[in-house]
Length: 232
Image (tube, rainbow, N blue to C red; front, side, top):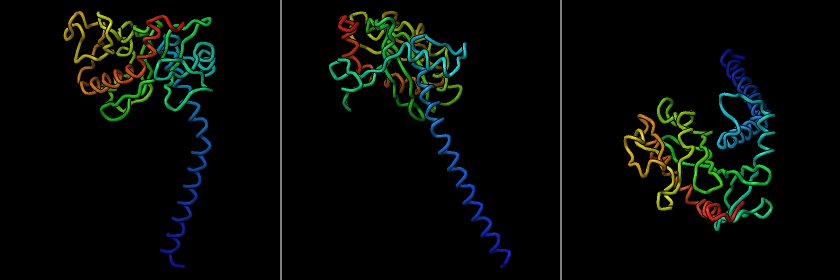
């Protein structure tokens, strides 16, 4: 057998072995990876309502326990009616309720927005008044580190707390991201509806603002029910 043929056979065998090992590793780790993804989402939902903070690291078991004790996942239909899981349809929207002693404190809605380089995924929490934002988190994005990537940082996300999705006349306006500092760019009457932007990341702010508005419009029937005290 020539040395050339031996080299070809060796390369083929090595390729098969490496491919098999990679497949086994991927299959074996898949369940672990899915669990980590689920726990990361739970962590961000808890962060959006202030139950955990980045400065205080928690074990996975603690996060799982906090979530089970405080968060309830339900669905809402186009009229804003809450639907239990067993009755949901493909047209219903997911929502997470922060509940203390059977009283809803906040409702958390998933955000899926266009970004500059990919999707921005996170959660926006609104207090049970149906108007006031209690928190915002991002758990997945492809924005540029140091620029649009700042959307994942605490300094940016904490600016959402206390903002309103209604204007002074009670009209829905969503919550948006300014092109710069709110105090420098936005009129006093609108400042409660806008958060500070990220320097050098105007397009990220523009896309995220549009994504938040689109998402909040979808959930506006639910928000109206909270504003009218039709949900406790």
